[in-house]
Length: 358
Image (cartoon, rainbow, N blue to C red; front, side, top):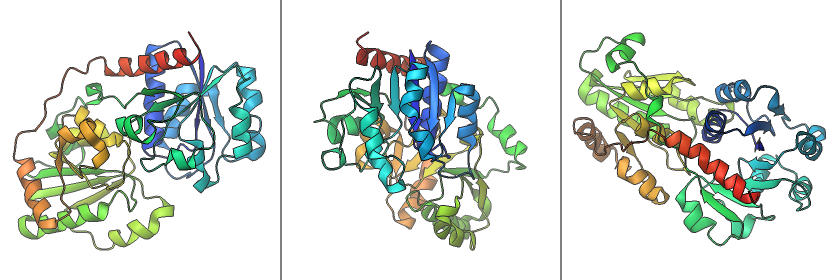
């Protein structure tokens, strides 16, 4: 079987991280040949995941990067490579705000006489298919139960839920003490809080900084905050003012490819985002057995809620809750997730085969 993943972009973020995990799983546990097309270059500043994907698929990587003449050749390319499944890593109608996907080309790509089937995945919790959807794919591969049970429940296409796996194998083999020392810290009883995510208004790092400031004013260097994530120029108006008045206990570390180490080191993962669909970083924190404080968004349901100590949005309340969470036993116990990535791969294979009638 040959699968072409069509991604709107591969700049660092949740969607490219999900795609990277799909590819790793499929190449590791199935005989599927994977192709990847990056439809448009959203940002050339932060491309760690893009490089990792390119290394995995080699010459099967197609950088369309917004070239409309090249994009028109996608149908010929699929015939030439004998593609069985086109898996679009976002709802095409959701590409419109970035002027990425041409509707006429979409209609051509979805025509039933082609030998391939089309799968879509939605990474936007606020997408409204009953209003915005123009063309139905052959199947939907959902990343969250909320889409399956609510947003898309009335769609007639074949549906499957394939969530991001909890994967304890990503844990760093290093000890917390070693990781701290590698990063220049000599442990003296401090507690380390990690925040991971792109610097955007939705990720709400400003609130985490204010929590850090409040804790520093009362406890000094007892609570240390580490911020991992890129500061893209298109969100500079948000993050630049925050950089002008950071408390001393805040360290901004930029984009990194060793987040598992920081999660292993952390006494707490503080996730202040108030706009999420399927936050992969929470799955990574759970995989590392890291305590979590986050807003318990309604659509998280059982997928994340059992693992979260909820934020309230009140600085004083959350300061006390943060201290209590750090000093209390972890509230969840990991099950046996030994085969979680293999199961993740086979869920894709089974869904693709069901679409092709195999």
